[in-house]
Length: 129
Image (tube, rainbow, N blue to C red):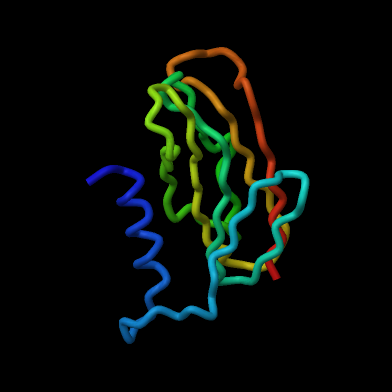
């Protein structure tokens, strides 16, 4: 099974409640813009989507350890619809808000084996109420 399908399967399983039914009233919110604060409630699952192209060797990584108010659920690469070789897609990072407060999710776009500075960074501000 491809890694992105495993990530989607985990996300789907996380939305199923203890009776085995999906609670459609709790929609997972997706965020794309680091300049806009992410406002969520404690217990809410949300995703961050960023452009990525693993064929270049680059991928998104956490720059800093997450604060106690946020936990990482999963991350996955979503390939493009295009059949062209080397075309980029998106990385989707799924988080769960645990406790109230304001935290930052710092991300860097790097080649893991290189010591150079990241070519891109994103910092998302998350406000958990």
